Image (cartoon, rainbow, N blue to C red; front, top):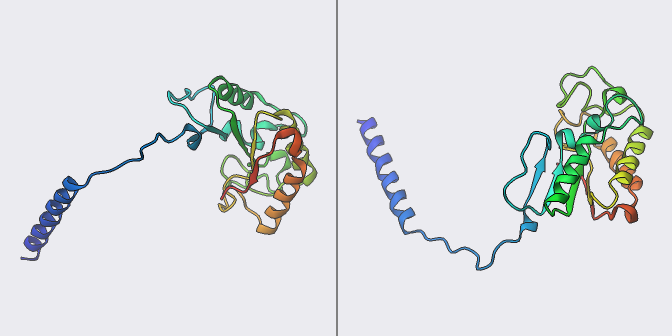
Length: 196
């Protein structure tokens, strides 16, 4: 008997919801939402096709945005190829607002290079051994992409231990040092914030 009552009440609610939806009409905005309100993360410019629609901002992440991917082997040995491709794709499609997201400590500078709990690769979520190396990287990338990348996202998903396995106090040191290293005039800094 309970099953029958349950089935009947479920059918009644389903019918009532269909009836209510049939009477609902949506009145949208009278103007078009500008493309500047829409953005996307562009991770692999050599693999991902550019979308068939207009966007206002592009965020580089994955192989276009990770410190590990841009300075993988050792201090000062940069590989800008994928970030260059992201910037070129954005510029070719008229996107003038680009964001770079810091994240993933390179293995050679990780305080725990064998940490397999990190996203990306071993040791990527652990603090770097040398803060000076981080500041050097911040200075190098902001100088290289001066005038192209306008927004600087100071670490990806710091609230997740798989991307940041350290204290909030240390993170504040990171963002304070990074902010100081970014030259406001040469990069047209509009924003620097933490990605949570």
